[in-house]
Image: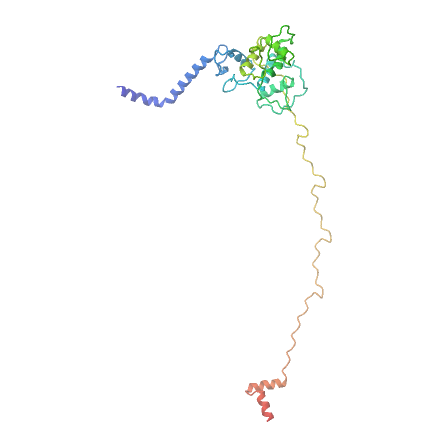
Length: 328
């Protein structure tokens, strides 16, 4: 009975094996996506490499919803160190989302020339805007966006953007927090004290460790803290000022082809001068005319003696015999 049942079922399963396989995979993937999705966030926006109970999970989701940081295709990569592109994108996102991009004064009237702009259009706009407003700088016309971002390089631009969004300025801290690795007269000491007071930055064992690199979890958390209560959720506002494409300099523009000068133009072929014209063939001069062939002169006639000798010899007797007979 069992064998007969298997013989009847197996051919049908073999015909529909592919369909059954895809149905099983679809059910498994759908169930995993539902489990990993957090409330209030679309499942497609949840990076697969962020644990649900991670300390920065909510901040990362907030930063991603506000489009303040980019996620990679393979995941968020929160433990990876940030680069200068990440900071430029965060600063531009805060200004554009708050609608205060145009309130940040420009240091350059014209868009700066940056020779190593990234190929991604949105990222290229972000780099241009932050450099244009002096939030970040270039070296020899290059942004060097792939360089690692250390913590001390992010303090001043973050403080400037926070001041604009908060509508305040860096106050005089009456009771500053002691920082063992940042001197009181340091360049970013006051900005760091202010951001620490506002709960945006923090210390670790009374040290800032400004020479260390920021990772992506930390940068997303900073962006979410600045945006909290200052940027409303919703679609990102597009910048009204589009970065002008760098125009080619006059030298680089293709100059029109130079027209041929009158001398260079093809001149008509020179007509043959009368001397150069083919003259009629020279008639043969009288001297050059063929002279008549000389007529053959008549052969000298044989003398009588020779005739006689010939006739004698013809008779059979030589002339010598005749002379001998005569002398006798």
